[in-house]
Length: 244
Image 1: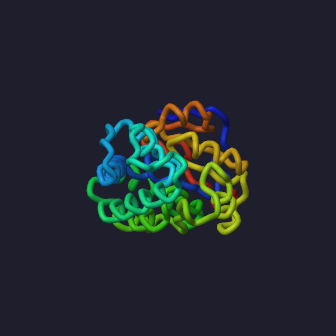
Image 2 (image 1 turned 45 degrees about the horizontal axis):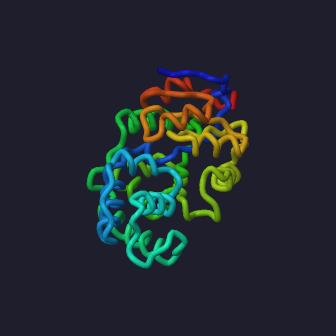
Image 3 (image 1 turned 90 degrees about the horizontal axis):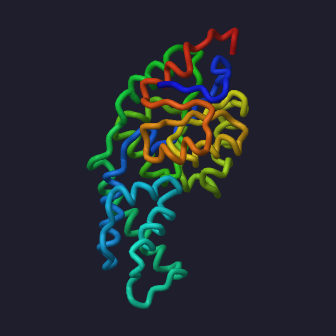
């Protein structure tokens, strides 16, 4: 179901910016497996997938930090402020994840079909990806799952000095792709994406089928959908060039 919490002038949109994990792809199993492989490597107990999934959204560094601190049993001699240890753990996690990023990760139902409709016609808005996942794995996943062809840009958590919800990445994409805040829509599954849009002055669409529907709804997106197939319904038909 499409819920309009605030009227969005969809007929003027020139740029659609998508989150990746929980919006375009269901990557939770591969991320959870990679986190647990890291915990086990450092002698810590594994965590339930549901718990790890709740940590996703703020980048790989925060994901692995949260997971390492949950057990409360860091390896002997390691303190919670031991940054070299956390950096070692992050590097191990990233190596594992790069090797296993497409073991179980899949595109959500309706995503490819909706993207194909949204890109149709010479007057369609440009589309890009902005994720807190490192840009290398993000681009490789988009290539591997047939998503990359839809996007004029794919940027990750290490593409800029800051990560979402800081608006730096979104503002960069807007400037690079010739869109204003009023003509940009950020589409994502969590409060991070809604806040990123708000911090940039852009519009937001929340995806209730993703990893963080509760936080997304609490953040108050302008539009909310329950299925990727509803993106087209929410945005309506693309206008002729004279109206854009």
